[in-house]
Image (cartoon, rainbow, N blue to C red; front, side, top):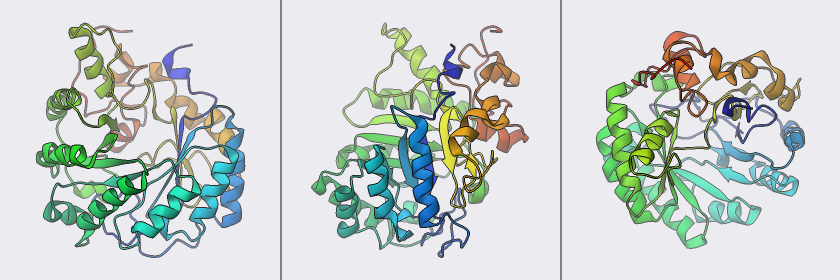
Length: 354
């Protein structure tokens, strides 16, 4: 069995967009969130059924990430968390940096069994961060939340957008992550979907340079560094590890486990129940209101195609790293309309056909 097919029976991570309601107006919002909840979002009963259906993934259960919008805007969030924990899911939550994100809700999340939360910093100071988030005070509120998490013993990671607008801020954001004592710094490489289409992606050449810089940072004390929608970080990390005499097993970097990418180890469920390969690839395999989400993941044409890296187009399909990396399927779709196409953020020329 090749790496591409390791995740054919169950996802490793399930992202559930529990609501699109959010009080921010982020320039790059994938969800195009709005202040009020969509009347069509999954009801409390539908959410509970979804959790039971996902529990049939078997051991080990996927890591469940409750995202949005702002999950704190969903009235039954704590009930859903407690139900998920009772079924055995490890649960993380991705709240927004709004006035809702205070000590009380954070304490209740921890008491409900949340293992970690993610906080977003897209700038190292209020002017840069709030400029992207669209609401003054977001940076300061997020910073207070980070310190409250530390006081509560609630693990948290920092998420950061990578685009032309944020590239110069990354060293300072890394220093902030070190100062806050986070375990993980996760970089989200822009895919032009939702409101993110108004921002500018970095070039493939700048991406390669950034990867080398990130690997240098990873050698220092500080958080582990992972990437989202940039799986070719694994290729660069593996090459660096070989050069350094460590084989092909770089530590503390290179993102999720080898081979995980949109639709292969990843499943995203929208606020209305649509099942997507990721939050950045808005092609639907079906809806959990009328179909079994696990069956959609295992058997739908969309997900099955995304797990067959040997059928990808262009350099991605020819690349010797295709099973380990496979490229961003979301970016391929955003750039070409074909989710099986070539990822334009990667400049690597495959050594030979494989």
